[in-house]
Length: 170
Image (cartoon, rainbow, N blue to C red; front, side):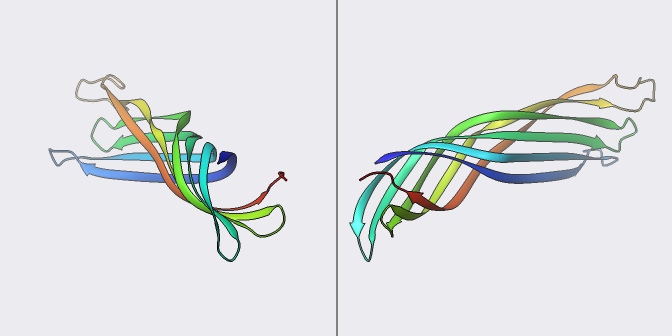
């Protein structure tokens, strides 16, 4: 058993664009959403069972806290006569959970190698924005029509980690 803390650079980015036609079939709109992060930190407990095959090894289960800074961006555009436009972004540190399994192999006196699978789930980031008309006409002034919009970015990941460890005991 033990405690593990790790921090790693993890540049991840994903984006999605949805293009739709308004119900009256005269105009289209697009919604663009992206989410990214550059780092991940975990603080986990680890419980295992020691075995001896060709080398001494430890099969273990690990679970605990995961944290990352998530950045979510969203934008809205349409080609209607009043040209709806809007968008926003948010950057938040999110704390969630992680769980996984691994095997650690003892090879040299104080050196071990390990391979680990981890699943990570962080809370969703909600971004509130406003969509407004960027053109006027038909007796409607510019920016007089406003509609709230909310976008949600969710983060979950499956990771495989390879590690080299040095043990200070004995």
